[in-house]
Length: 199
Image (cartoon, rainbow, N blue to C red; front, side, top):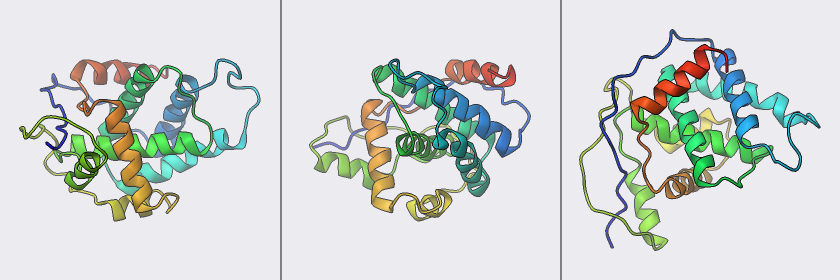
């Protein structure tokens, strides 16, 4: 059975806004996560729960620990918007919200840094019975960003999830997005505008 291929396009040129402090980005990302994954039956912000207050600091820590450019976090948010489009009924509270963020950030880091989605993870998809295409060309990432293995992400995520959990979270996100994890220039620009406008 062929290994599922991550679909990659050639995104249009991007304009990344000036770097913002991790805590500012984390608050903006959290607001979007709360907005797009809130329940229609129990809409935010009532009742305001503890995890909604703690998620920004958790995201800020990961942003700082990873040392990656702001483009990675922005790309992760685009992937989460697409996840919601693919799973319109999905909601995320507490641990689920953290899981979604970490999974999207790990995948975005690999795509932006010109690293194909982990071959071992894609082989795990084959073991689970997934299909897909064969080989293909790599992406057009930022060459100076080093690869981060799952041990790195285990510590960057404050050991909140095991290495196996991280791999499975990454796998599940990619499966739901049909292995199309490349963020187009148009989608990136749309979120960039939202971010700089404080939306």
